[in-house]
Image (cartoon, rainbow, N blue to C red; front, side):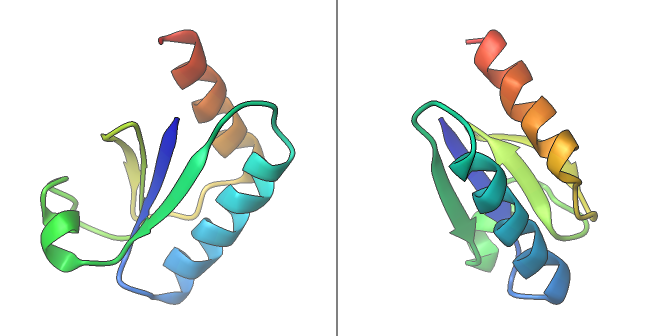
Length: 82
């Protein structure tokens, strides 16, 4: 599963990336956490505000730092829908 944090390096983007990596480190499974900071790549998601949170190429949220529980819930839902 590929988890992407979309952002150009603002404090919220850095915080979300840190939390995502922390959550993933406590989960069983094969996860790739990628920080997407190239603006042309970010624009492909039609994102309006950063940070963005995407799983397997699907943008799930933008403009907010998610809680650990919310991140875990999104990952669980994505695993169930595979």
